[in-house]
Image (tube, rainbow over all chains, first blue to last red; front, side, top):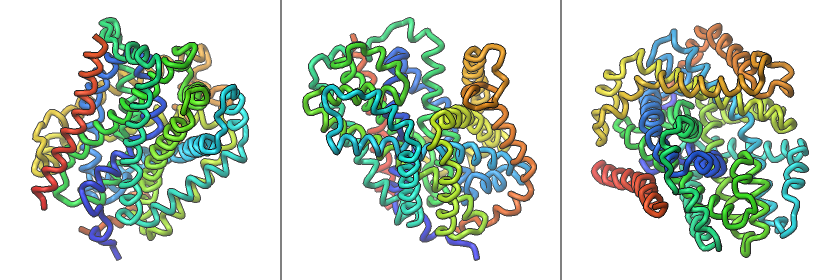
Length: 488
Length: 32
């Protein structure tokens, strides 16, 4: 018997908005946005970032909202319903790409929990060798596996409670807490002696940065990875909305909340680094984990009252990461429910699969790096499939029938911009591929062993190729299986 | 100059969010 939408939906618009913000705000906002924005022109980057929100994220999220609301099914089933049976493989490919991220992202959430515990137990003391601490933890596969299992258990527990009883309740606490913590950290950082040097560096606008194509390439990439556009998570959340829900408003609010989280994180991280780090640029260029777990941790150990800052920072990181992981587990569970599984079985099913396929990433950091590279860049392809699906159905038709009648934001161009998506995709994807080719001259097409060819274009193309080939072969089988939409 | 840029960045990003949240409140009130 088909499940009813009633009783399986958000209890309020705020529930949907907060869950969508929780989905988008993740570790990328807190440890990547400050680093990448500072290294790419600061003020110029913010300008490029806002442009990217309108050209990349909002149109994709809006299309996702339509897919979820119209089909009342997850990624795979929604492609079948909206684009036709022959497009089921596109949904399956998108789902597989995002599941590729679910499998290792839980490990990353585990790192954040471990560092929160370090902060709470007073491990960060002056003179601490933070690099040795990180290396010891990173090489301890058993500890990472246990933390990973804990993270997945928490996500399964929340998702098993349902949309209103689990996801909405959790996000109503977690998302405001993330913003309160980030505001507290930004205000605390402002009072550090020397913080002003950080602001000066961060907000000085240089014309050369505005004219530098790299500023825009980095900003578009950050938007693609940070807002969750084209991942199918927003799509999954829109399965549970009222027919009259305003898609444009939810998409725009999610994007600006995501940007604000990154901006606040930057207002905390950059002044702190410039106030205390002997070589601020080394910290900015140290990579995500290097900056958060080595450089910032060292500073927290030295700053007066730094323990409180460390607790606030890592708690914000844990909540942000967890609210995104929950969205990804829900995405997987929705797929199984579409195939006729009960919610309880579906959350158990996706949880067990995630545990099994995430363990290699928990045990081996190089494998995790490889997966991060392959499926991270794969999200660009996922966005492309979404935009091609929208063009197949008809951008004008989607706007007129499913978006415009229910929205207060009657700016058609905000959705029509999806037609330009393939152009942005070609530029951004081409840039990343060319960079990766330059990292492995003469060997860029190789992919095994993964430990040697961790970031080659070859490793991306082979793994994507396998997923796309399997999705194409299983197209009809999946189309038949995905037949349990929520009944309105 | 950097203070002006900071103010503009704050206005666009945080102001954009506050504007959206205001619209959410208004729409929710109308729906109710």
